[in-house]
Amino acid sequence: QVQLVESGGGLVQPGGSLRLSCKASGIIFSIYLMGWYRQAPGKQRELVARITSGASTNYADSVKGRFAISRDNAKNTVYLQMNSLKPEDTAVFYCNGYYSGTLTGEYDYWGQGTQVTVSS
Image 1 (cartoon, rainbow, N blue to C red):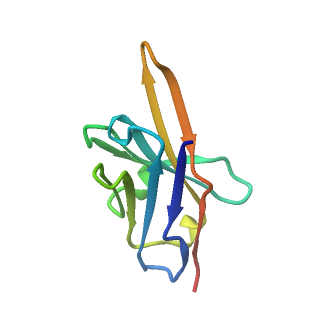
Image 2 (tube, one colour):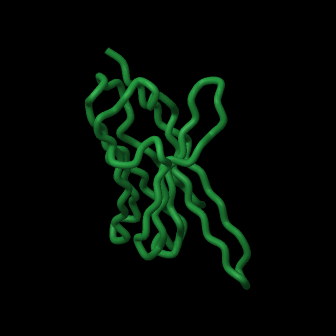
């Protein structure tokens, strides 16, 4: 059974920091493309950051220079360090694991989400 379990969300003041974690089980974590997405009320889910199996990263323009994604394959965990948080970062953050292989097919898994609220 595949599980992606997020943690680390909460309420933080503008300018503050949070570190999200997503622990995966039931997959060969090291080969998966791992990502963080977010969905604000009334908006579509959007990509925040992704990290490949080779640790290459890419970010949404809105978070470049403020957020950092990383992974620890020994712990089957992906992280999102969020600094200089703004009220517009308020959203439910979701962890995603994706793998596509020519012979094995496509696998796409989501966590249950963790709420991040930035407010004074």
